[in-house]
Length: 150
Ligand SMILES: [Zn+2]
Image 1 (spheres, protein in one colour):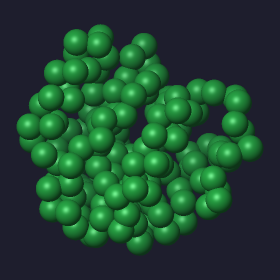
Image 2 (image 1 turned 135 degrees about the horizontal axis):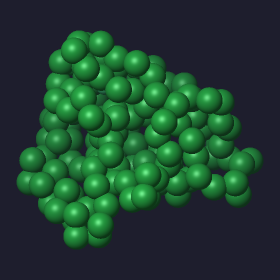
Image 3 (image 1 turned 90 degrees about the vertical axis):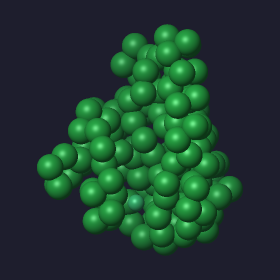
């Protein structure tokens, strides 16, 4: 279960829309079991089909999390033109089985979370923490559907 504040969902969504059609990527920080902040990282590939995080920014983000009393919970990236499903490369590059991998699809406006290990993945449930703004976001167990006009 990935528990995440609504403001973070909005922040991620804004980020990936801003970077499109290039893939966006970043980290999600957790405190007390809830994702409370996203860190936008540079996609060094500046590619529409793959991403590579800037190692210096990764290091700085983790340092910032630690000083704020939070920890790295998940990595996210966007799929501007494909569904929210790990690609073969996403599976190959998933380096930490303890992290969640969040994928935002701009094809069907879905956010999904996955655990990836040993070359396979499984979907993880997402819970949004906030009951205001439910008009903007639909929750259905493990898929967050974003309305296109939101
Ligand atoms: Zn991907």
